[in-house]
Length: 484
Image (cartoon, rainbow, N blue to C red; front, side, top):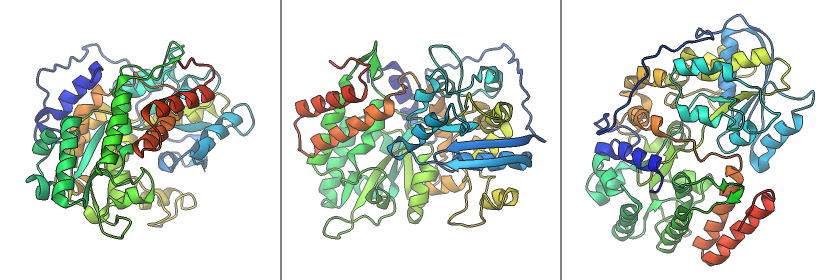
């Protein structure tokens, strides 16, 4: 692709079939990493904060941060924790946080999803400056892209840190690969789908050989993050909307896959999409159909694929796929109007900049039983309604990643992938993920484009009309920008 980082990452991921998810080779040819010999001067304590007290109000959009919060309380039992979970539907979470910012209802800590984190980081009066924690991030070798996302480019202030980084991959069904392509080996499968032309050829082969019973993807939505990540420019440059040529490619890929019957028309995050992960998907006549691949990032393995496809465990493999990309992630910040900013800052350090917590988070220490023992009221001992953190999430510290990667050789997630260590491949990809394209407007712009592309793929509008509709919607939502 046009973007240099995309080319570098593609070569790293595709090397020897390492696939973003761990193949047999973990070195990178022709690439030299130079580490500074200067000692890292740590101005904050790297030890676990204990014995803290006070009230801490945390708002987030999932229960992930709740797990961190309860674990924090386990080390600091005198902390009174108030955790509020607000959905992001129709921007409810974002709107409530912004509305509370200068009121007595303002929380101390907020979770910020990748889709809207920049909106908060770049705002003048929402988040506290956490730049003095940078030495901890340096000590932990925190991946630079996560720091870049949490930094306001106008001031250079770091206003949010993340506990994870999220390079993407393609997960595929091994049994389908063996039946229709003669192998399930990640090295060979990656070679077969190393670019979108080859990926489309595989889709055609699947349709022909399966008689239309196996689809390459569940939805054309699968491609959005991969293509958006490979633009040369962000959506707005010099206050003007930029439609990169790669967007035109996405239009045509969506049209081809829909028109040729290579996708099952199961929109992402809807019931049919999840059914494709567990072999319960059927066509309109009730005939069973299967999905060969899903585009998912690091967190997609434990949280999406494994949790929704337990009956297909062991039948998945993981490769880099045709395009390098990253998807998602959660950052944490302290509100400027926090009632207890010092305690909130200690919480940020615990969540994103503490070696012990990041190790516990990644390796499955925070079970339902562990968290219930800390606070039975916040965390019921219940397989259905309780919370836990399964092993496998990819954390933001290279120092921690290097220490724990080998432990995933025989992990539950490795078993789910037929013996692949996904952590090793993600570890190779993570240093090369770029945050260069992140803007606060990303979520809305990309949601508008996704809907327009689906209408074009369905034949409801021609491309010129689709692009004009996209421009009109962007102009309406962002009147401060120029849309030519």
